[in-house]
Length: 171
Image (cartoon, rainbow, N blue to C red; front, side, top):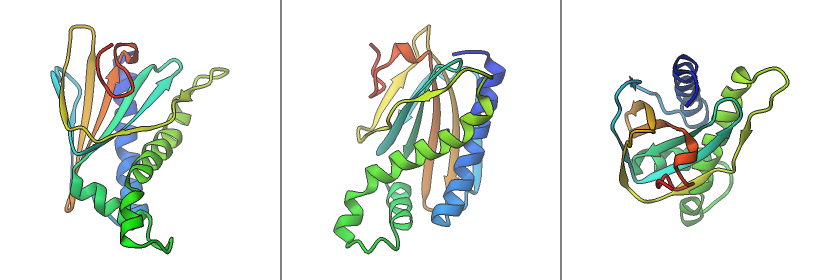
């Protein structure tokens, strides 16, 4: 998964940017942030999870896993002003979550780019399967849990990315 200190710094930077995104784009305040950098044995995916692959000298997967209540509130606030009906707003939830992970990682990764080497992001994928992922010997997980008054988002950094497909199943 690359040098641990750089990955740890990346997870912290992504967490900071998510806090700012939630505040700026949806008026949602994060009340607590909890990091786990060592010995994470299991990831628990919640109602909706957006996933993106990072390629370059940092070769990892990032997943943002949202409680249903936070995803719904974020989507409603993010799409406010678009003139959509309630039904149409519900249809945008996956696009909202894909936008968020893409924007956050795009902003943060510019600070981790090596001179002359590009960092590439895959198109985001959103899954709606709540499931647990147990760590095998080769995998490494680092996590950050952000708690808000309307729900929780878990940020997962997973590597090496070659062990997983785009739905976080082992290959």
